[in-house]
Length: 162
Ligand code: NI
Image (tube, rainbow, N blue to C red):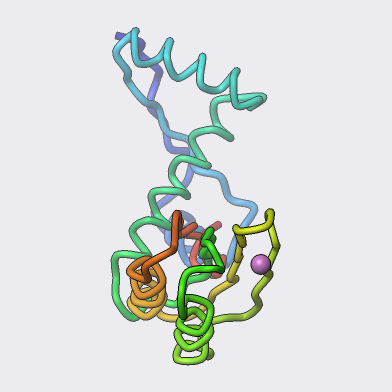
């Protein structure tokens, strides 16, 4: 095991104000114990992802998990992107895609359409709104026959992430 001395250098009151976001300069330090293999694997991951230190890598991992958690709570305001590829020759598909987007027009901030080749189109929709509705929009497009691939990139409005 890799042991690192645990310490938190702030009182409870400053930690509470840090969590409220009122003192953004406050930093909380804490130690983590890891099995040697996990620590070695993490250091490899950090090197491959061009992180300059462990702290920044850990901050990103925590943010990713918090964003995933935001998306699980219906009613939470989130932002993200829906990216999909389809063959525009498939009968009525273009009409259906347009109809779905109009049904969810309040969620779609912007859209980009790229003609990839003779048959295939790529669409990128920037979305913002309640997580449940964004996921419903994603599922509606995913269910359309002729959509070859779709991904939902879960990001955040940024308001709850430091
Ligand atoms: Ni196209």
